[in-house]
Length: 637
Image (cartoon, rainbow, N blue to C red):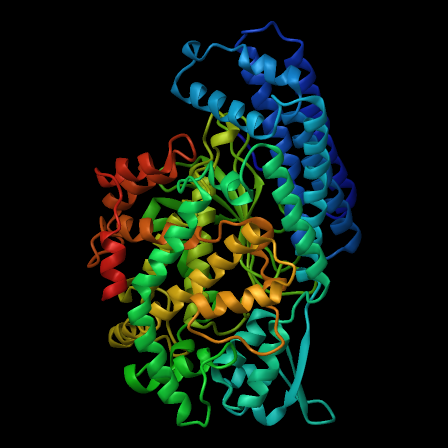
């Protein structure tokens, strides 16, 4: 019988959330109880373990999503409660010696490759949780894990609820696009409100010529969740350290890196310093150009309030790229439809819109699509696109799992959560949309696994960005863009404009790589040093790694949401980029929509999910181990 997607409620989301989240937790408990009572060595133990894991992931997926996107405060509160319950259950489960003993009783040589890998990963997770330690240690782990869940939620909640506004003179909008100005009317005092929402703040910092207004808006943006998150972050870092050292690790970075491609905390530091050194000369040249342009406007320093603005001016004046001109080709609706068309053609997929009478998502902005292979009528999954900002919504861009796909059990469902304008988009927004859609495609195509542990984006964490960074390349190709990027008269974006756009994009990659390494160093060093004065350490890291200066009295780290999710591993963005550049070298840059290579990539890298190590997936596609040559060439170009 064909599988069907998850049925969402028509109205009573609170009751449905209880039934879905609470019900799946109950199902997990039932499976675990049966597992413990099964004859040692029986293969049924692994099936029951998989059942429990599926139910636990179902409960966690719906709770994490709805706590981030649902407009109803009561639903958000209940979702957060379920998140805590899921984390507590998972912690208790991985400290359960009877479950560990049952899994350990299964002989690996009775299993196929997937089964052996799954069993090894499960037993490793138990040992990393301290199951083989004494009762006192296991109880400490249980308490620390519970506290970490609370702290991570609080840190993210303070950012999500920390939306702020700056009032600036209406004259500060003189150089902003017409549609932006129309959406920001002046009040009786002649002032305009600019919020910290991305569609508000990023265009303002890019196009505003009023330096004082830019500084005011940027200062507000880099004050999100401060000082509320200072105490939360301090305890979060200390608690992670206590957990890691309790389990025998030198600190959190080593504990976290053990199950990643990079392997150790020391290797993180080496990678950060290596990339910083490689990007240094190009970054210094670029900053010198920006400083010269800023000096002409009476600004001596390139800082967090003006780098976007002067980057835009340099690209306009030296490369002939005017973001105003570019924006007119990127109407949101056309971009949305074009993305589906291109990814469908690339990966051999079809997207069928789901009528509102069939699916009533959590907000009217959300659109849903059933996904299948173009040569088949079978549905392989469903996606939901929640792409515009609103109050209390997750305020960055990310892909959330609603359902993890399991072969013959349940279809994968993913949700894209972004904050794009409803009208004209910046090209960087288009790139972001392609990037996040890469995660969504990975979740769907990798969602036909027997073991839920390997479903979807289930590779090592420092590889997960590579498929998304790869898909960004299609947002820079003229032939691809011309399929959907047209102006109001229907004229496609000119190839020579795209060429100028690409040339302009090359400008800044040196200092932006250094900025990324500042973020990575902050995530790593905050966990390594657990600073008493986070602002002081942040400023030292700015000096050491960033070529863009911070603004006085700002506290970027307090609103750096990745400290909750990526912990000490923000380096992964650049690590993945090294691999993404190597993956892209296999494609024909003259014909990016050629289906043969894309199908091979789909089947070798995306479809296996986490059933192989990431290095092996890449080697299967490239025919060799990955290397840094393509990345180094790109950085030096």
